[in-house]
Length: 450
Image (cartoon, rainbow, N blue to C red; front, top):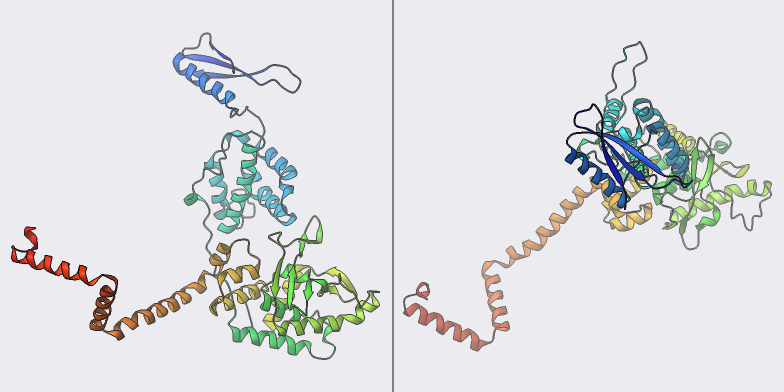
């Protein structure tokens, strides 16, 4: 059981020195902490009892002079690495650019929810500079919310792993006080416009000598529109990932670009492989891609009988194992769209278009979620909620068709059907007995007197 003591400070009215013992250090030496308390002796005893109770329950947090900057850098160095390289890079950028310059000099144990909320406010509504510096650009609420998530994870680790905090100050911020990003509508193309875009790409790339001048976009765009796969997943796709006879693609890899590692192959976003069935039209497109690459594979010394690891969409046909940077492929797609008069549409929009068209045609949302590789069906429902109102209208029409049969039968017909069903369910003797009892009740003054 933890021990402590109270000593009255000399020449100080109602001032007490609290002392309590801490667990022995790694060197085996005794340790203790002190605190000055102002108030009555009874209140000082209650404060000491609370501290000793925390020590016994192992919830006591020792005082530390560590600053928020020191903890965030330690967390990024040790625990932040447990996340994907892209996520780690983003967390480090948000914390170092927006949190550390504003409140990084504060002691970790002195950070309050109000200090954190001030960071989010200054990010979205930056103060005007007073020393002639360049004014800061106002950031979106989405960026502020991402910063909140990164900071909350770091401070939660200070509570659970390092025992430097008793509570997470970021978690104490109520949901209504957190940054509220405006949800943007997903940009999709109607089926006719999507078909026209792909047809324009195909026509341009069918011209003689096109493949020697520019990287072809039609095959990968058609696969994205027909499968809903992410750009990184398509760029990492190998010949062995496609079963042309069974008409399916196995999604097990993705290309990721980070400042620290450059381009590299990693598991898909949910770390879970999935299989996506494809129609005959996409099978023919993949066969055409393989046929166009055979000569280059032969020049690279790849066995044409088993070119399993060769990429279907390499950075260069002369380098069949080097992937394209996702940002470069995305920029090329946007440029091609602008050339055809399609503005404000990104490569990721092909994925959204694929899902939207499937849902509009009545495909079960669970099936769509599995094709997209979402970890939860709720993600699919939230992302494509703009499609659901139309489906609700269709559901209302179906309900109307069901109820219209009642009007067609008529009220009289419905009562006759109901009476016949009652007769079938209730024995005739019970019906006759009920009628006699009701008649007697009426003769005796009505049912109210009974």
